[in-house]
Image: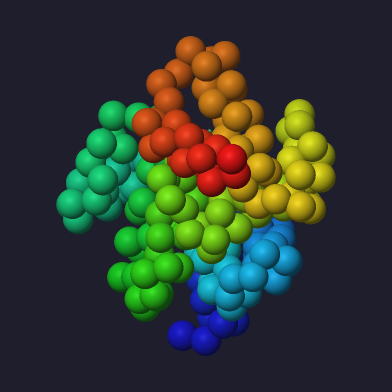
Length: 187
Ligand code: DGI
Ligand code: FE
Ligand code: FE
Ligand code: FE
């Protein structure tokens, strides 16, 4: 499957607004990869596929996790987390992506994790700040991203954790661990 076919196939699995978001993440991830020094080609591929399962029926996302022995602990947390693990599996099975760095960038783009690679940080941050995003604090994260991918990502996770606390929701432990790990990296 060439690049054009890959993009058409991913596009067909989501509403047009989510495809626009995906294009924004592609553009931003490539820019951040150049700025911070990881492979723009890998950033591009991870970005195309990062939300491939986002609009699958939630049951199907859960089935991919259950049937293939992916992180089962995800099933005890918000369903919004599931598309990332399911997406990494689908990227490999259906799109032949076998680069583990790209697969990890998809797998951890929502939750983060301890010791994130630069590519993982870039994709996760691009997901927060692509041009179509508009949430309170996004411009602050964009400004921080000019000089520190770690500090920008901490600000992103801070916002997500605050949002979850305000809604009375559980926080997936890996997100707390990801934030702790990034803080250790910058001190
Ligand atoms: O798929 P996107 O909308 O582009 O963004 P995403 O994959 O980063 O998903 C973010 C959503 O996941 C956001 O609305 C908050 C929700 N979420 C629920 N529980 C958690 C969580 N996000 C993180 N990082 N950690 C959680 O525990
Ligand atoms: Fe996502
Ligand atoms: Fe995200
Ligand atoms: Fe996204």
